[in-house]
Length: 201
Length: 201
Image 1 (tube, rainbow over the protein chains, first blue to last red):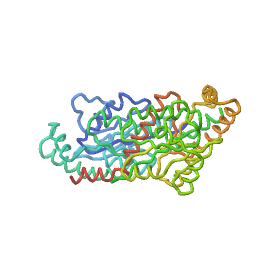
Image 2: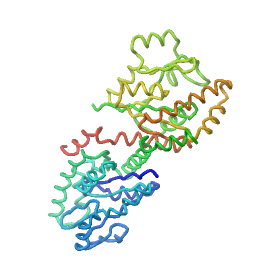
Image 3: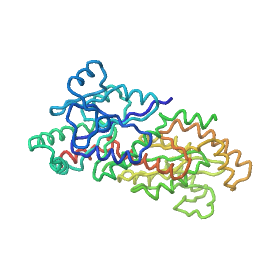
């Protein structure tokens, strides 16, 4: 059984990576979404076990202590993490997995699993990013400003990724992400058995 | 000006790479097809300067001698080659170029331009390859057999490529090739200026 591909999908707050990923999942086949754990409160419509595992600080601490988090980050006053066991099981059974995580978390995953494929979603411009962040209307002004400053720093992390996709329109961005997934699956390094099968069967 | 990407597109005779590439060109943008030179006679409907430059042996010899061929191969009694100057000009002006060439030629291009991106088109099986080769009805039986044996050896070259795509159906194969082109264009290593533009403009 060939091991699955681990895709790391991240980018600054406000680049719309969640929306892009929803679009990707309408088309892509055989890709598993890894559900993160978080200590933050659910937003409107978010479902436990689908969007996130909503857990409390004590449980989050316990999971870190017992090595059950592949990566975790603190963002503002909340924590986000990737439960390791489920990801490992899927990969070892040959399934491709995508993690939608923060840029700091992505750095941690790359360190632990350098074979992962990392995709950075960027806004078309800083102006557009500010527009999107303030258009959301979920936060007060100070948080918006802090988020924007953080996003600018996060943009610097783009250089550490394998791929960068500009989210100009959701459809175009999703198409490029689908192309990356398709291409990675076609790498010769992952298809040695496929070649053998053609030659000797 | 960022240099363009050189895509090398090849695979054994009978895998239908020409048909796949026609399908790719219906969708892809900003990709230039490099027209090869050959000493073989035009097939039905083939146009000089579009499908190939049909030249004679003396002219082919002259181009080799003056270093005007990026690569060339002898296949059966005919020769095929890639005129270098046009490819270099397109790449240096920032255009992506695709070469549809034989596996031996691909090896030569990889040696001279190791930064090229090589895509191998494979048949789903040897049985299907035989079926396609004999279904073409353009050659006598001995040539068909020789072509099949050559194709089997060419399949071994797949390991030297970056990507492999199985031509199960033209539509599916073309979609994967388009994905590879899209993905290569999203590589961070090719987009450093894009990131700078977002950050500082």
